[in-house]
Image (cartoon, rainbow, N blue to C red; front, side, top):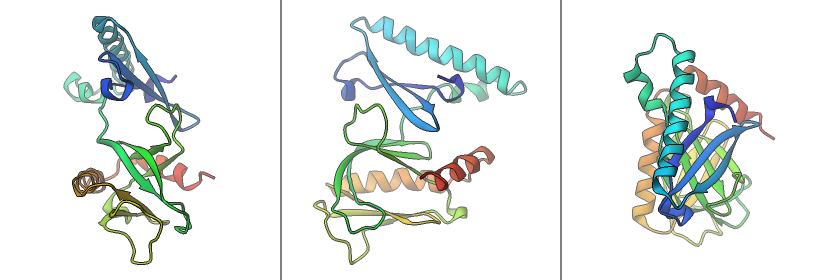
Length: 200
């Protein structure tokens, strides 16, 4: 695991243990999940802090001019949003399937099960300056969705169609997408976007 891409976040509800921790890292530029827990809450907090300490040391070396105050927010991050949505495939003729989605900064990942090690797929969410946008609803011709509260993500290459079970879920997801889309892309994010475009 490269410490550069390592993240840890407490996930008691998802893991089903009050001391559950989700550790993620990049493997072949895909996100890999590991779920761990310990009966002793102090032990899992010690592991969380050890990961953050290792990240802090890495960032001090990688960004020697940065102040500690600038580095602390980069030590670990919580997900912008997680939950179930339905999705359809690239042809938009397949039936919608219920999937667990995780919004990790600009990576929208979807899983068959919340505790899967690898995502079934990932979608890069860029900025409005780069022709990304989120729309409430689905195109009029859309069929196969069971849930009625649609979301369309427009990227330079295609549209991604999702459906939420409730209007409040739809609004929460749209808010999360808009938060990312309204933020200008960093130079290193262009390399990530290029990788997504060339994924098979």
